[in-house]
Image (cartoon, rainbow, N blue to C red):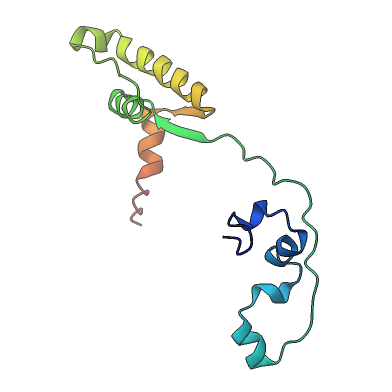
Amino acid sequence: MCASYGHSPATCPDRITRSFREPQFVEQMIPAGLLEQYGITTCTPLPPLVGAAAPLPPAILEIPETDEALRAAVLAAGGKPMICQEKGRTEKKELAENKKRLQKLADAKGQRIVFVAGAEAGAAAAPAAPSKK
């Protein structure tokens, strides 16, 4: 809170106050007690900030290609999964429809999805058993 005007220091119209609040030197970020204790009197300028930070790459979600995993992923993404009876499962309707729903939800959030085959997902999750010689 600005002592003179009562607003935040970042929006203060007084340039002197603003430059005092924004650190200009490395030593301004060290507590005063430590500066005194170690006898630090230097004023090392901070390097200028170069542009904005690079944008983050889109999130990649790896999801096993099983009915249960797809159902859980659709629910976690905020959608309503399709749950078929036995006939629909044998025709792979549930798997295909839940994939479409999950892809649509991920596209809306700017995420990428990689579907991992069921055998690969199990192998990646469980470590290989040591072989006996």
